[in-house]
Image (cartoon, rainbow, N blue to C red; front, side, top):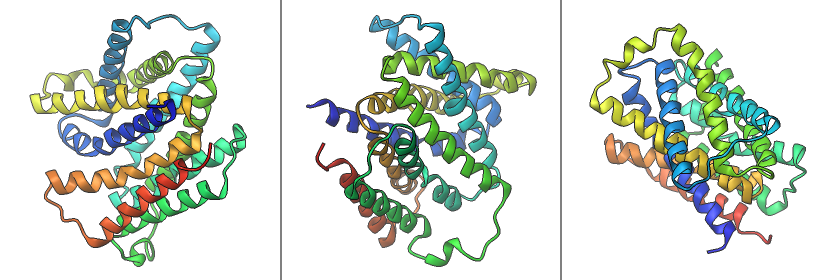
Length: 294
């Protein structure tokens, strides 16, 4: 299997894990605050990734300059991005948050073109638009009026900021990974993100919440830390090192499809014809972006 195909599979696995994180977050926040959840999630992710790299004998120190770069990336894409999304989700509906986050691949493609001079041909542009339309169909359940005649909350503005933060994180990470291995770079970024999260965790008295976490709560927290943080972020970095940012970013459109499937399988929610049609459009768009001539 060629490196590009492996990179695409890793990007797909990463977004599937992130799509499955929503039910785990809902369970976990019923027992702990978002501040404590973020701290425990990234702490367990750092530990899992460090053990993995140690087992593969790939642990090493980065130069001060490289460490500084990933410290900044850890703030932008790990701590800041997740913190503002957590705050936004307190007031943003699931449908509207899904619509806003669906702009992530567009932001990544835009910043990739602006900062990395990546070229977007007609096929890639068409694929991004097709997948975006598929997401709109899924979120609206086939009703175009879903997004109109409503007021917008401050939380929705925070979600818009999170789109820009993730776009910049992905693009600057691709640039940084030209000189640093994905595993080591991600370990540093995740570790700094966890250190930043330690400040609000300690000041909010989160330590007192840990003793009351049930086995179910810990299971969901570890799933978020090991699979949705360590594994998914590592695979995302692997894909960014190999592929253009726009080619990796378009996989984020798979998130709503995964969310719909999980809701149907575990929460008993129905799947409509519009959801199936939207899912087909999403995968068609992803295929368009990643199947052109290289």
